[in-house]
Amino acid sequence: MLHYFQESIPELEAEFVKRGGFLAPKPGSGQPARPGKKGLLQKYRSPLKRAIALRLSQRPDATAPQICRWIDAEGSVELPPKWNKKGDRSFATAYKDQTIRRNIESVISKVRSDMRRRGLL
Image 1 (tube, one colour):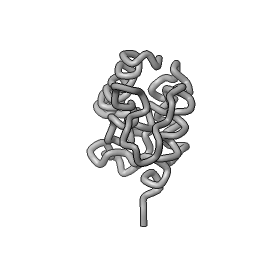
Image 2 (cartoon, helix red, strand yellow; image 1 turned 180 degrees about the horizontal axis):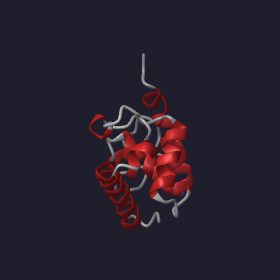
Image 3 (cartoon, helix red, strand yellow; image 1 turned 90 degrees about the vertical axis):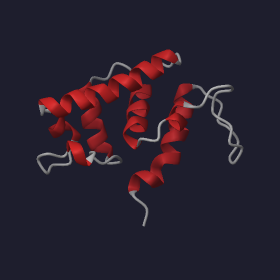
Image 4 (cartoon, helix red, strand yellow; image 1 turned 60 degrees about the vertical axis):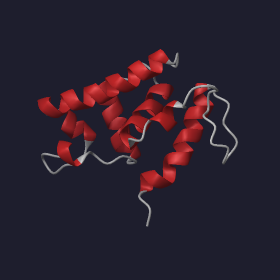
């Protein structure tokens, strides 16, 4: 049985490619979405970073709490076990904890900077 997010990755990638204005590679070609560069979603192995990149492509001005609520609403990414201190698997709840907030903001910041560097934001 596949995890929900594993099943939805191709759909997320297709949506990201469409919204980002990339030309999608032919299936099975092994080519990235952008010539000469590895596609941003292909770069990220982390489902969390992929989900953040997708959300930022939809709403570049989204704040960290908004991104956390969106990830929870989508239900496609699990909260990393190290961040799950209270037994609640919600990103929005985890964001309220100061130590976890720094981790979440750091991940979002890294994705934003990658997207800026590639001219996507």
